Image 1 (tube, rainbow, N blue to C red):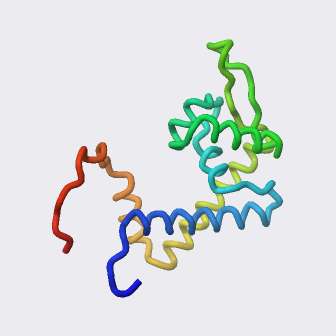
Image 2: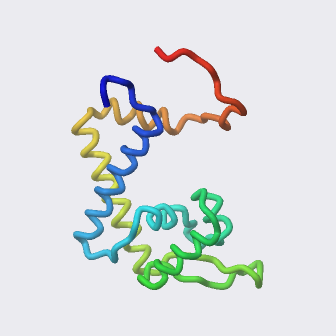
Length: 151
């Protein structure tokens, strides 16, 4: 880019990819079956006791069909399983297998190490400030774009 300021969503996307790429490389080095970034998102959105496909679609912002495809791939990889929903005969819960729980723990450790690496690179204060800004309640998006001059 030629001196113009990059959009914040673009910067956030690049930051997310930095973490995903680092985590996927760490998992690959430990022999975890290959997964894609969308599968990682789905995997991270699971509750410990299992989650329905509809809820996973809502949490990840994709269609049920997309979630079904990712679930089937992760079931085939031995990382997820489908079990009957205790409260509904029509629904199934998606949950991690023992191998999937182990992979999730390894992913969590990799993310912690990446956050430490980021702190080494940009400073621990910057990481604390970044986390604080991202954890702050933003509220829903405005109904119409807000017109404000850029600084």
